[in-house]
Image (cartoon, rainbow, N blue to C red; front, side):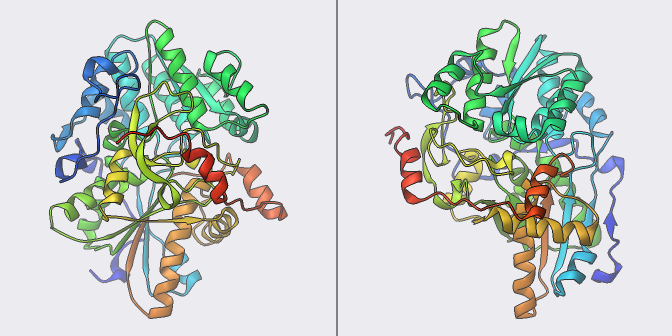
Length: 457
């Protein structure tokens, strides 16, 4: 179809909401390495994970072979509140850039949580409720995941305890209050009410925290509180599985209007939105049905892909979680307090790490001020204030579109707009006031984190 005939917003029908999640591992020749028990260094079995995760979520985590996993009716009904989400033709951004490129974005901010995180939160809360649990614990960085999980838990009537990275807890008070409005108990991390929190505070006085710290605290509370389990908003196989609804809907919209993407771009922190967006397209690539350039964009201050190492490492700072083979900066690495809190994790999804190691996708890092420059341009052109995390993908898309301007190529670019930035005004204020700075860790800074990585073959 001629590009001029494609509507500005491509809306699918309710019947187009996927009825099954797509498991990209089923099509991967090289499967992601198994999680290891932190004490025995043996691959985790179902029973090893039961004290931490819900039973059905463990089955999804370990399933490398089932390509399509049916979505329960209760979850589908909840999805109908805000799905399908629109695929938008960014005609105004194209005009602002004066580029021959065709740019599209999949917008996941059309729900109260303001992000894609609700796609997995409702699934994890559902399985906790089905198991008869009293509640769940979790961590959150910028707060999108904590907000989504508090909404999901309120819907199913279970408790929600959130450990929020301290710097984000202080920078984003309104995000915290949304969680509390939905009934969540929110604690800044590292705190003094867990053994691990006290240990981290003693070792790093005045620390602003990290996702690795918050994960450790949430896991400790879950494993020591009867009737609770721990849930995670990114990184895990099960989360990327739930988020595949993003890519499946994007794929359906492309087929509806004959859109053939050349480049697919997502921001990368732990991997949930990137993995969800690219999974069905990566499946086509793995099966030899199509080819795409897939680009992960991460912050230069926390460059897991671009400067990390592919190795087994602890998923958390407190070293109580399973060990994962991933691109990591070391579990002791505490990134600078940049404003993209959701991307401040030391590691990356094992699925995405394996795909990157196999050369099936690219990665690049970008500085914070450059990201907000792109966010401001996008907001003025397209009328949506993007989250700082999403703006990394916007930066990547703009850069690719400007390359097309130089070469005259009419490439089609799709990127994930994971959420809105209306609770991130402290960050926008810093950018607008000219006080925002860029921090890029030195080789010496990274070496300290790398030193914490266990020596496992």
